[in-house]
Image (tube, rainbow, N blue to C red; front, side, top):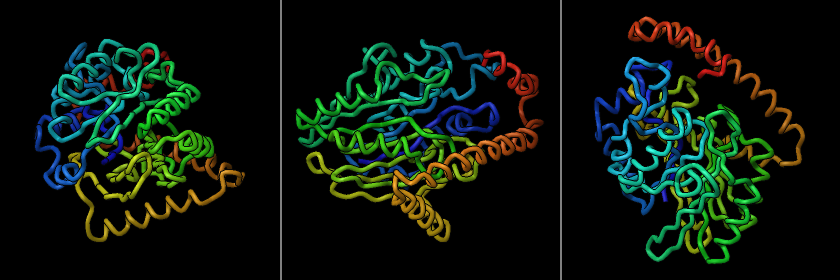
Length: 358
């Protein structure tokens, strides 16, 4: 199985006309290069987290609000064409453009033949969702989507941690290998919080085979716990983010046998100026491998070490301030390159956010 990080097929408000959607419109299926497709083709299943809607419902071309982080319905077909088999939509942006748009996104993915998890009962963002059951070469796999981010546009639904633990236990009793795709953690942190580490161990102890995380936009370490594996955050695979640390990620390649992880490896990926993922090579590859190894070593620190959490909190506050400064610099640099119709909308966005109208 291959797992990649966040996939956002729209343009962010600070990259309107210059973001992922613009590059996808330009390249269509060729947006993903053959070297990435070849890596995907080495696997039976490919998973990702879809961090944008894929729908034209309510889209207005000159409205920054309705175009922010919005991919086209065509994006669902492209994901299928690229080899993605399962997507998670339990995240903090799926309801960004309204419930009907989120439902249309799920339906577009299903029509394209892509499995969807994390969208509640009947795939319509209500009630308790059920795991997606897959039969891969005689291997029974149950995939569960879970969001722990309590934010305005997040879909959390009825899938609490306790409910998820019960689902895992039920699937294990049926001899199914359980894969949890989970949206959690804090943005831009290079390590998981103690809460994440404790939750990961709980899921593995219940019998989950894999716990694969998204949301921080940057890579966090990978940890083997017993027979299971935790990838705390796979970073951004396709995105137009501004933080330098979010411009690289990896493909996590995992082989399982029964309900046990047999082997795993990572394939480092970087994004070019048009937001297209490429395989890392040369000195860049070496530096990324060294950094991934460092982040994995952080997981050797005890979950009972109070210094770990203290450092985490201080670093989180520093990064939040730094990313805001980066955003302001990017907006100042790009502002005049935006279509003038977006200028007042960009300037008014902070006001609209304070008024809860964004």
